[in-house]
Length: 86
Image (cartoon, rainbow, N blue to C red; front, top):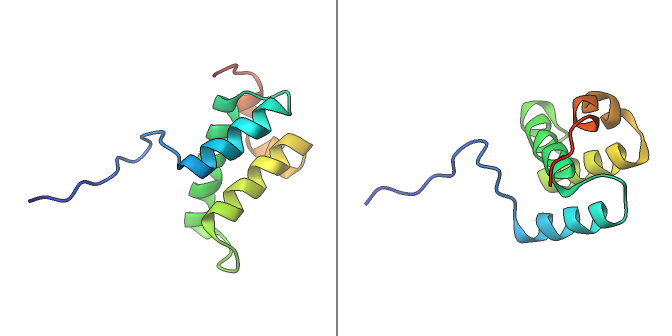
């Protein structure tokens, strides 16, 4: 029986990531959809050149926090500031 593989870009996040993103969206001016995209980009950045001293989840959540606070991720994800997704 073939194993099920997750499609790249399927847009699914873990339950803990979803709770993290919903909480951040509730307490910021950004939507869940915007923050979800930042998280996914953070995971991609980790896989391409991320630090091996932290987990991929920590790396991606750090990018979300940086985006919200106006750090470097805000510049990298500037295209998301124009979109209003849920």
